[in-house]
Image (tube, rainbow, N blue to C red; front, top):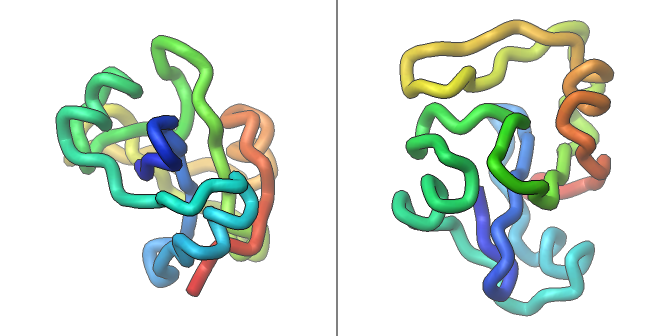
Length: 106
């Protein structure tokens, strides 16, 4: 999870890719993009860092999905705890999360 200005943003990306914060800033029209701290992440999502799922938050959040995830036939995502994951087709993940697809890897 990241923060753009003062707004929380969920970013879905492959574990092998790093988020390009400058690209995210251009998409969100914000010059200040940073990783959320643990308290900010829990306040926005209801989940601890490391277990934050890609959907199911107490209030709607902006979600960006790196285009590379759509190259996979299946992906794994956090399922609410740091040691729980679930398998999903990336196109289903896109629908379920309401994400905007973007090129956001370094």
